[in-house]
Each structure stands twice: as C-alpha cells, then as structure tokens.
Amino acid sequence: MDRQTISRIAHTHHAIAAPLGDEAVARLIGRAARAEAGRVLDLGCGEAAWLLRILAAKPDWQAVGVDLDADALTRARRTAQAMGLERRIGLHHLDARRFVTREPFDLVLSVGAAHAFGGLLPTLAAAAQVLAPGGRLLVGDGFWEREPSPAALEALEASRADYTDLAGTLDGVVAAGWTPVHGHVSSLQEWDDYELSWTGSLAEWALDRPDHPDAAAAREAAQVHRAEWLHGYRGTLGFVTLLLRRTAD
Image (cartoon, rainbow, N blue to C red):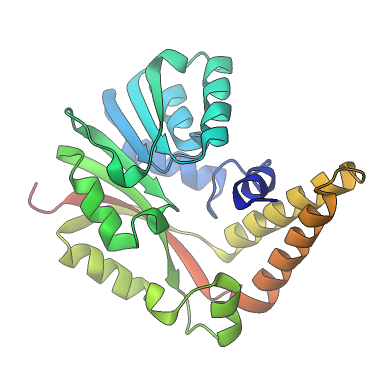
C-alpha cells in the first residue's frame, strides 16, 4: 500500500490529520476566522477538513485548498457537495510551494504540512507571500517535548535538528517576524487519541477485509506504527498550533 492510501484509511475517524481534538480545532477556528467575511487558503489541505469547518461556520467566507493528493481532493469535493459548500471552495492539485495568487488571503493555514516546504520557517516564508496585510496564519508543527532517543528518531525517520523545543520554536517564529496571538499545545491525551484512532482505523480496515490483497499490508502498517509510537516517540514529539500575525503589520 502506498503512503497516501494508508494515511487515508488511518484518518477515517480522525478527519484532522494532526493530534488535535474537536474542541481545540473549534477554538482555533473561532480565533483565526473571527471576521464575518474573508478568504482562506490551506497549503496542504488534504481532504480540506479545516476549510470545510470554516465554511460551515462562516457563511460569507470563501476557501481555496492546495494539495498533491488527487484522491484526497476528490473526497474533499464530494464532502463539499454533500454539505452544500462546493460553490465556496476551490481545490487545486498542485505542489503547495508553487501556488501563487493575485489576490492575497485573509487567513492562511498549514497544519501538519511543514514537511512540504522543508520545515517550519520555510512554511512561514511561503505563507507570507500569499497573506494579505493584517492577515493571520494558522500553522501547526512538531517540537521536542524532551531530548529524543535513538529509538524516537528512528521511528520518526527524523534527525535531532528537525525540531527544537517549544521555547526554541516560538523564539524562531518571533525572530522570523511573526507575533503569536493565540495557540494550542496538543496534550498527551490528544496525541494518544490520535494515534489510537490512526492505528485502530487501519487495523479494523484489514479485519473487515480479510481477503483484500492489501489486508496484510494494512495490518502490518498498523502494527509497525503502533510500536513506533509506544516504544519510540510517545511523550517525546510534541505538536503546537500557532495563530500568527506579521509583526510589521
């Protein structure tokens, strides 16, 4: 099974592809899209879960999503149609790094997609190019809760330099010219709920389809991921979602 298929199945019961609970998502959206009308862009939107929640809560907002996963975008379109939101959202099969716009956005999102830009700071730089003056950026990325062990780094296929601690993360954001105005640090409970949903959805998919040619691969992927989480990075990798404004604005 390719990684996109595994991810799609694993997120069946956890639409937000990050360790964030529904209450946290609703609170972040409420702060990020507090204006009555606006335009929002998601760089790495996947199935557009963030965008569709914003549109459902804000009747006068318009949305654009960009992602390289064509299947995810197809499912996003179907969901938008089912919700009656298809006329207010545009979805583009495109590398987020290549997206350009003539009209900047009031809100830009990139939650759990910093890898597409090569890290958090390059993500901030890319967002600045499409953000309107006075606009807001909602960005989510990992950080080290504690010094990563060799087992954690192996499980994450990461290096120590890929992240810093929470203080270093916010210091870097501020040094890059941004001011945090709100945010959320995912709790261990949110991480555990996310990982249990991820591995459980994949394992159950395999149990429900014992004769499917990908059943064994799905079952193995769930087992490997569960072991990497529990015996590798649990309690080591954190996740912070920040609502930012340009300091110069």
